[in-house]
Length: 167
Image (cartoon, rainbow, N blue to C red; front, side, top):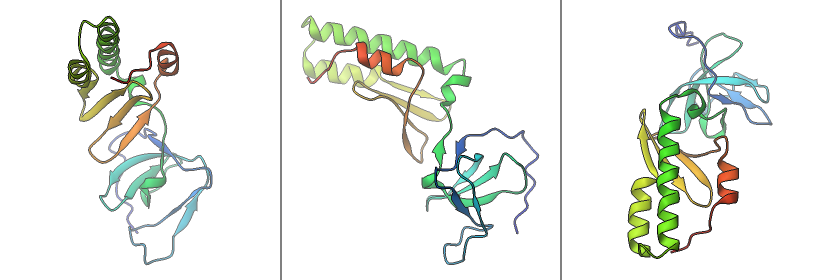
């Protein structure tokens, strides 16, 4: 059993287990039977993600790290809510995108110019992640391993008040 020392940093939940729970293993070996099962909605901290889809997690209740099917983990909350530097960058990007929409509607820029400028304006690189604004669905975050939709406070309202754009 891998009971690696995980006391280096305090526990910080990043994900939860899915509604039907999640099997875990002491080592990432799909040929072996699971060593146990995590209950639905258990908060876990992602410690490591392997290209194969395996994820090494630590449970909120403590103990040692276990391996799970990382593709089934559910994102707990947006890291933006705790990051004082990221939120202003995302807000500035939204403002720039809004101005571009106005310019497009007023025919101050053409569709190809809008696309090129909106791509640059709606891309925020911060803390090892790339955040991308999609005019229809909101923010997406790419961390080098997975692209995830991120619902930030106010996103739904911004989209509801926004314009449908199909240049």
